[in-house]
Image 1 (cartoon, rainbow, N blue to C red):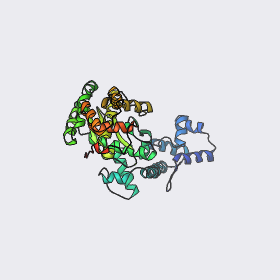
Image 2 (cartoon, helix red, strand yellow):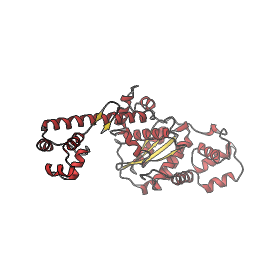
Image 3 (cartoon, rainbow, N blue to C red):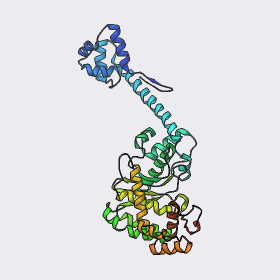
Image 4 (spheres, rainbow, N blue to C red):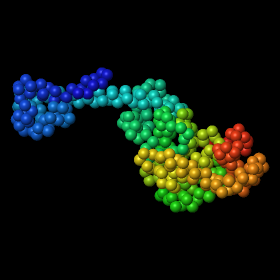
Length: 349
């Protein structure tokens, strides 16, 4: 028996069981008279197998009740079962839909605009490509390597929505086969792009990564996601999704190299997502690529953190000046309100 708010689906087996009790007939004897296995009869009574027209005819012979009665009983049960399950699934999905940033998604044009919760559920099912949103519990953060500042239930759902949009936008973008060796060789070339404007480097970066089997997608930041970027495998390509959280260039480039670190270090496509150690390793990878520790330590040991000194060091390293400032702030050599005028702001659509 399956119940929902509106429906009660009772299997025909309940009526069969009542008939056997009235006749004082055991299931073993009943199975023999029906020429069915005891296991099948048990499943029939418990509603675990369908009551077929053939079985309906046998029931008419053994129990004396017309086959059409059993066929109608089975049809009614299946109809109510579908409705009860659908209602229960809708109720569960309504609760999940309320935790997903639907309005923000609709503002970005990812899902249709609606205020009706039932329509939101259907639209979200289509967006995520699942028959019910409850399945997302098994998919949460699965095989997604990402850089974000905090993790909550709300941020998990925001991450899944954001990553799904990245997956959708990446599907139609063609790439070469995944080639991590070439990617590693071209890291210096990617690093040199930090001094360029987005109007210039975005196209270059997209082409370079596509040659390595990687699609990069730029998406707006979602409130509550604490997200900077995410990486995952989709089919025969790797997808990197980036958001310019705070629109600071230093955060953008650190996030990019953090995600590239996940790829090169083999963290992508792990069933349970990334570990804390994986995230730390990707952070160290990004730090070392952008500003090698040896160079950074030598610079700060000079005890000259003036604007001109920072600019000279950035020129020597061949990277954007704000990246130096961001590293100095992160490591505590500067306050977070110092030299922010040396940082570059990006507008990437």
